Length: 323
Picture 1: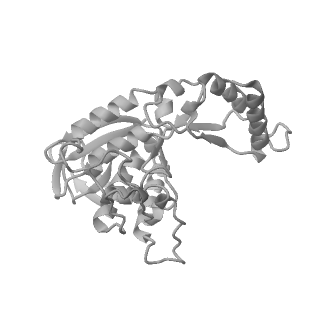
Picture 2: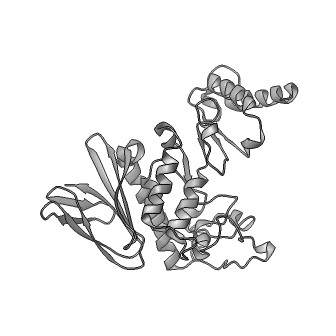
Picture 3: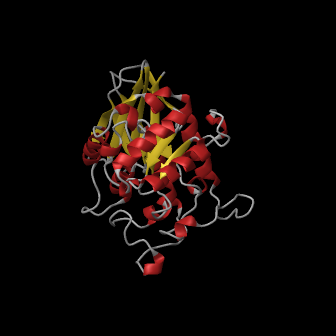
């Protein structure tokens, strides 16, 4: 808490948030991402937050915290964090296969409920739900290298036993399934540059390779991943329930490896169904109505006695609304 250093940082903050110091922050930055903020005393962040919000009440403050961050998210320090606890759960459910690493749908639900209950709902809705970052292996490569502790044994320069080859169709389909979950679960989907184009790589520095552009490297660029990412973003923008709605588990089948949940906002109800199995599955959905539509895969189903029987291919997701 050296006063000189604190004042220097305060001056930097003012410089970037209101460059010409005219009281109008529109020409400044919109927020801050704080690297390893847990290495700085909370007393400083509380004072700094007052300064930031005083310049721009809508400025966004997010911190790089790798564990549960409830002590930083009480409204007097940060607005959000990089939600690595979310990422760890996704690895254990969607990616891992060996019993010592893989978790069931019911265990995933338990982990997600614990995570959601750690924070107020307004915090949950803005947590940065990431799949990878500049500090981990990229998600496509992570899928290709399952059954390991999160962010471990993934540096090529340390001679870790890591498969750094280009991911294939199997990895891409799992990634798309994970994206369905990422864009429909409460929080803000965080995309690390290049993931939307199929970029892969082991941990630092391989995860920081130059962006692959369609007009430069067509063999590496994955148009289908970009289309899928845009589709999920479009659905999230279209339905307020996916951005601000309540969350509740719906159908959990440990035997079939099915995980599903409901997002609801007012009269708007969406059912997210995820087949994490390596097999096609028929799923009976206890939904009352005459007809439901899978808006993700453009397919409709007619109900029978208060339930619908739907089919999902291996590692596929669906997003249903009543018609």
